[in-house]
Length: 83
Image 1 (cartoon, rainbow, N blue to C red):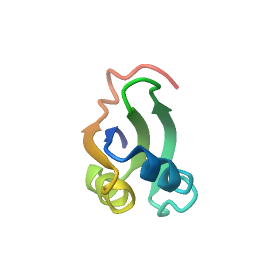
Image 2 (image 1 turned 45 degrees about the vertical axis):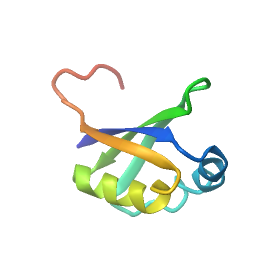
Image 3 (image 1 turned 180 degrees about the vertical axis):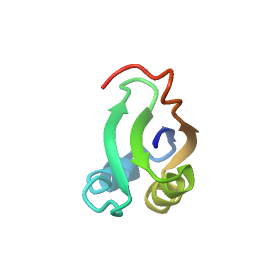
Image 4 (image 1 turned 90 degrees about the vertical axis):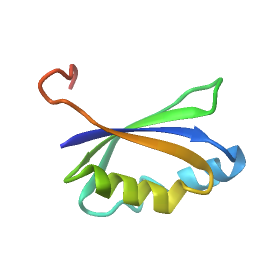
C-alpha cells in the first residue's frame, strides 16, 4: 500500500543532518519513493510504500520527531494518478 507523509520542520539544522541518512537505513518493509522539500515554508512531503501507515509513522517518528511535526495519510489506489 502507498502512504504520504507531510512534515513541518521545527529545527531546520537538525533536520538536514538527520535527513541525509533517512533513506539509507530503511527497514526492509518500507520503501521511500519520493521526497519533496519545499523552498519557502520548511515543509516537505514523502511517498512511501509499506504494509501499514503505522510502520511509516513509527519509522519517521523514530528518526525525525525532534525536528519535525508530521502527519500521515493513506493513498487511495483507485483515484491516484501517476507512476
